[in-house]
Image 1 (cartoon, rainbow, N blue to C red):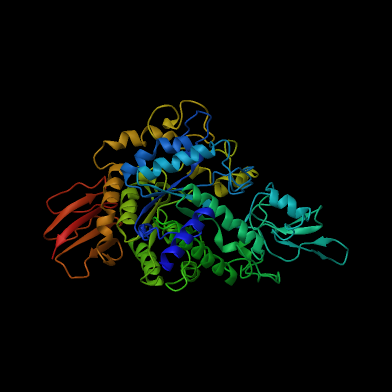
Image 2: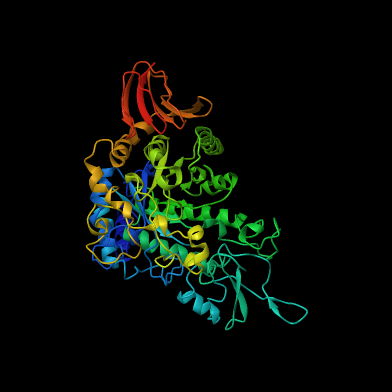
Length: 563
């Protein structure tokens, strides 16, 4: 009887105090979904313009979610949609809790999440933790030493030379050229910016900054976001002693320094591990599928694995695999093999693989490796065990667009037209090519923020969607088989014919009598794979099946065989 009275008292107390006793939800979801998903990057400015103002928007993305679901996409990662003065096209955030007006409203975003979830698509936000815009209220407060905000950013006194001139605190350089330090007249100190001068670096040695980030994440997670893509994580912390970095050359560009004090600091890895714990705790407390983070860590393979963490101290759910980005028009089966081997052997078996096709900062696949290799490249990225990350348009074989310096928008490139073609990221950011109507169906006629590629007449979704073995059809076939491919536990890979052909085989641990094999001819002549007892599952667009199945250069096939 006493136990019953105590129980009733506690239940009443929980109602009075907003749920003091938290029930066991018992609704644990899929905690491993990210390990084999297709994560599709949307560059919102260039995806779909629903209101015909020349800029893609959230309603445009929502209208195209059915397309993505049909394609086989499991999650989308949306490049920054926060308010921004666009000193780095949105990667300079002035408010982490709002939506930039050109993209829509918070209600538009909530609706996007709701529709995506109904279609089985998860939504990841791009999150920029290393720096904010200089127009963020935090920076203004820090510059004026408002109480509590004094150390939100990395501030330091300068040096004075023999002539009394004010000099930066050390020799650190910005990835955007020049010193990483800029003098602030109001603060009477230098502030650090490892990117553009309008992107001041946050100070993660401040517990208040760390709490701000956790609060912002909670805000979006409570709204229904499924996780975050973490931008430029390698630069979150810097050497506390502000020591000069060693010179590697006499040049004065970013690569002339060995970045031992501005990248991959021990504290940065610990920060990522703390974020993983935060996300895991959120998932446990709220139930449902895992909320995740994926990190952009352009660094050594050794450090990439450190961002992953391990089974006892986990970090990123996965850290982007950039090894395939080294491929170009002269790529070979041997170099691809080396990149696959380097990645797979560097990760412990309990860490998930991921394979990237491209991004908003990298040449498109078709422009990078040549149009005849598009299908083979996409097929390989979808065949390899693990998650696949696809940049919008790669599935239709879209190439880089043609943009002049006068038409360009990339802030780091348009200030010097003599180097625009080498530095600009505008080419891979031109609008998605939906059809062969005005502006490739991106909108109904308003001038797009970047010019649509003239190649849209021949390369567009509408012309491919019902065409057998088009780029789209090949991608879709592979995407719909991805779960099947990942059910085969053993992945073997090798090269043949003097490294001219790549062969990847998926088989069962139990030694079953069937396996899948991808065969990709990157030679300059034909190749006979010499197969017996097989069925052709997927073929690249140019491949024509024959009695002996001879592959021509650029051809790629996936077969299912019995041993």
